[in-house]
Length: 108
Image (cartoon, rainbow, N blue to C red; front, side):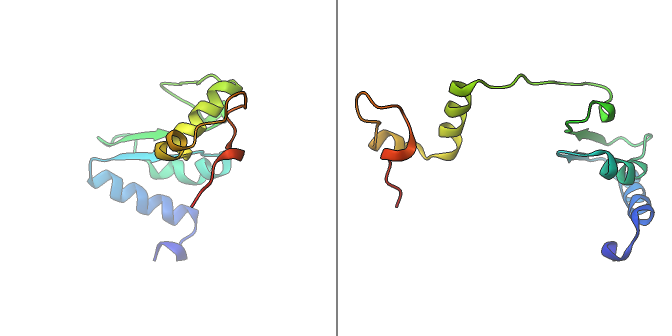
């Protein structure tokens, strides 16, 4: 049903549904063309809350948070904390005198 609709039809369907309910809608990494197509679907009078993330300052309204860029050390720290299970790092520490790269780890 929704796949058969054009942008205006999707926006109207979205508007009608969001007007009936109280909800939180989060849209990540929205670009100009996507927001232009979707924005009519978000009722301004609704009790719902809408949050978008975007790299386009022209799309940002209301509360704007601009996180700072991570340096190389912080980036590596974040990567190892989220992408590599702790048990692998603790059971295979980097050899003495070597940088903490992934080359010494064995993944099974």
